[in-house]
Length: 154
Image (cartoon, rainbow, N blue to C red):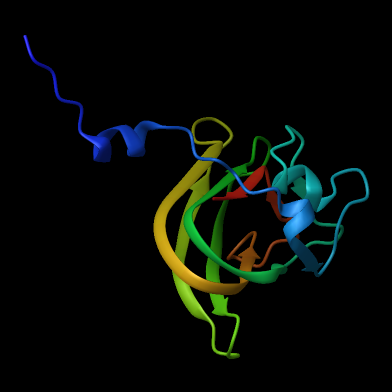
């Protein structure tokens, strides 16, 4: 018997080699709960990041050098409040100020059912200077605090 394993299939099922964001970026953010710093989300810590104030939040990863990115994973979790959240993920080339949306998405959390949202994007982005995540934690305008359980890039 002869077997052939497609490299393409193997590449898609293999765990990505996540970048060490702590050494590759400076991070700008609008607020942060000191007990849940952004590093927790960027390094895959179980606690994740939590904003220090309610409302719309922005996190920017400014890369020290232009990068090519192939995968972006975002995990959001909400176990206590029913709400509809929206986020926009965009990238900015190292040369230029014009951002380009990767995705704009809404989803509803329901503590009795849907509490985790996993977004995993296969991308080919060359010359990335900045990644920006804008979160509207409750589109109805409630006093909800934004959270990100995990934000990884490869």
